[in-house]
Image (cartoon, rainbow, N blue to C red; front, side, top):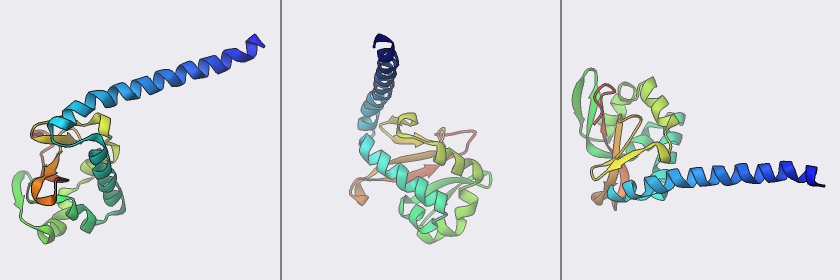
Length: 149
């Protein structure tokens, strides 16, 4: 009987450690997200929408997740994208393979946040709640991979 309990106890111990580890990372992220004016639930919903739209190549949905004018690093220079139609026309030049991969691999607990917003993809994308969009999280900048802001 005692030998049968050993695997059960080990499994329970592993599960307890995994849950504590995940909760610890989430707990560390929560204050930073609050400083950015949002919370993990809102950022998670935004990130899922962005990841789904990117994976499906849905330019219209991605464009709806952007606050304009948008500052974009494209073709070796900082550029301003003024509206939805301009964004969609430049979509394939803005979202290169590396940026798409960074977005696909992003998770809430891997984001960095401060009073200016949240960065994902190693600083490539900055998002934040935007008052004019009822505090919805929107993309506000797409940065140079070598010089993320």
